[in-house]
Image (cartoon, rainbow, N blue to C red):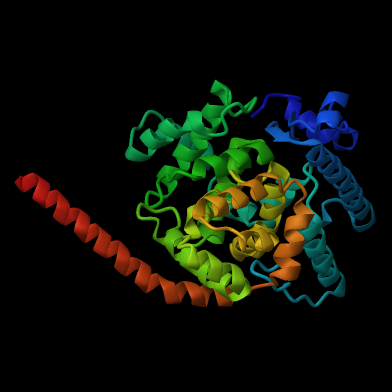
Length: 397
């Protein structure tokens, strides 16, 4: 995708040689905002404290990489590619103690972060993408690309509209080559699943998958896994019914896990979907720093969509004291957006998400969804009828 020996490939390969970010002495003295690039080519703005956090995170990445490579040396090459972890929580039982030990080790390792150089391989295997790809002919993606070339649909028109707005300024995504690759992934999937077609938000998800996986075909299959196996059904269909259900579930969970925050936001008439809808549709790719987003995705591909709720709740929980002092909606939005922008340390977020919020079972989330779904569908049908009635009145006039 990037050509041989691209800058991104070299950045991954020489992970241990990542340079320490050093803001100028003038920036340190004045505590000015500085700009720098992260591992995936995105320009990041932050103060000197943020730079220090990023340096610490990069050192953690290096240490975590050494742990993974040490296990490769002791357990055998690619040991993690043959270890089963049940998506949604439980480790699959095994008669072999060694296999169970490997599964427990892997689960712990993934929570601590997958080194960037290993992410493509680990994700592709453990998410189910490799298995999904194996069910179709080897030429499936190339054949699909040829078959849909030149075809125009409502989905392709929307994709073409959104391409220039997808991470503008990125050194690869914001080029003709990058946009062409992203377009093929999105267009191909829109034909694979016409019920989904294309929904705004998928462009950001697919773009980040491209940067991680480094090939169009692998990014395509990872997108297929997300939409077909991980995320809730109908999350990206025309009426976004699945996303509306998720927002209702999130509101209920916020009241249960963070009652003081929920009560205060209700007194302000603040609808959490104002900020959370983007989190659920873009999987935090537009909100959190890149490495933090990918650490969240590491866990999503293993534990499923319930992780999104943990992380969303954690963002509110981390700023509980500040949020309780707000007096209007604008203050709430500003606090939440500032918080997500500055979450450069993934461990800070994930510690709150899983240690303070606590784990939630897939079964619990499913029950909440079933409870909310009828009411959401009822409201969507009523909205559709009002729209149809309005159209008829306009036509009569």
